[in-house]
Length: 355
Image (cartoon, rainbow, N blue to C red; front, side, top):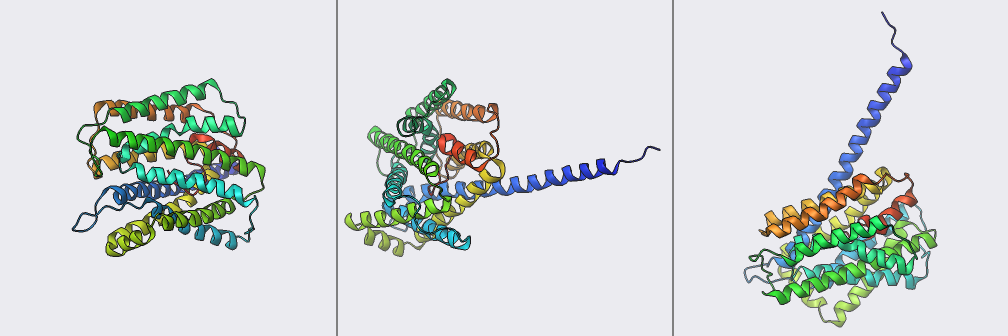
């Protein structure tokens, strides 16, 4: 009878344990990202598009949402820095944190305001077109060179997004009004979102490369600046007290905003964990799937009808993005390359604003 090689048995057991460990970690990462960011998307649409109370009042203070999100993330980031004995002092000049903060506030405000005029599926799919502004800002700020396939992919994704936006189902009506004018405003706000988000991603990338900076250090100071700026904006516009009064009168709105801020902050942990454990390529694929799930869930939950042209547009967009994910060779597993890969526009970068 042939003897069993102990080394072979040990190797097989080790491979089995490795696969099981990888499966557990993968399940944890996928479920965490899906749970937090899909919940974030649903709450975002509910707060901005669904009326509260017997009088059917709409929550209109998008800057207040920015303030609540940022103050929660800032507190958690400070706690993470202290717990890990990391530097709390700013690594870069304060004005650079403020610059990222301003562009991020504009990004998030445009994102929330756009929901008044376009549906969440339209907004989510339009975010896939962020590759073009990221490439533009990358060329201007970082002097980067892109391949022809990158431009082709950006063109195909933008084409799919355009089809999805320009051919909406006729029965999908904004709660803030009707007609093509609202769609135009929604598209303009989404263009503002894409331009500001592209600048935020690229400038964050430059800060990471120019300074020996912890992720939580940048998030802490950027969100701290965002807290000050958004609070100032609320006071100047006279929206702080009306927003607080609205939340006080509608306790379910308070719960929604608190949960929105919580899942937005929690998503940062899962984003960071996934990139460190599996790399940016896997993360990009998970995020694309998350966007698809968010769109489908929103269509079911909030009864958004999709025209056949929109289905074609969605297939074009997600087909192009999945093709890019599966055809590209996996990058070397280093923290720097992973962060750079994500921040260059494949997916959400490591910032305080989940998409």
